[in-house]
Image (cartoon, rainbow, N blue to C red; front, side, top):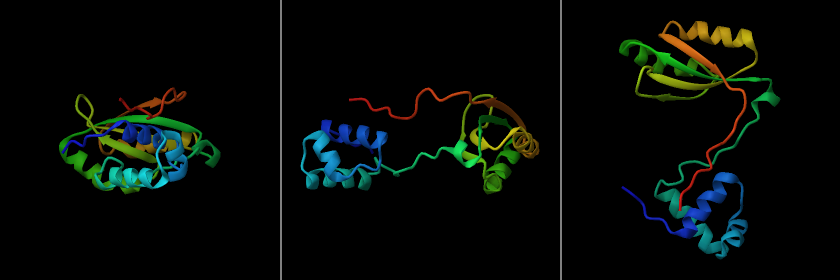
Length: 147
């Protein structure tokens, strides 16, 4: 079901996508609404499933994970389902999406070093053919929002 949003809702989404830790008072001041009206709108966005989660952004390099990669995996259907069931065995996979096209899955991963990457690739090969791309830099993150 499509939800209809107004300009205040879009402003709230934009601000929270930039900083999910903003208080209702800070949000309200930024969009010229009272704290209580802002809180009601945020809770409505949550209740209607528009806001699914409030997340944090971790600097994995500071935790010793210096390499970020995108791995595309091409596999047969029986191996696809086995891999999906085995995903908890891969803590270095931050997110994994099923996709259309030549590959079945695409995964964003963080790794300590090249041997860690090699080990991950070796473990993935039992499910299919992995293709790896190393992330050099991040150009844009998910602050979209159209008016």
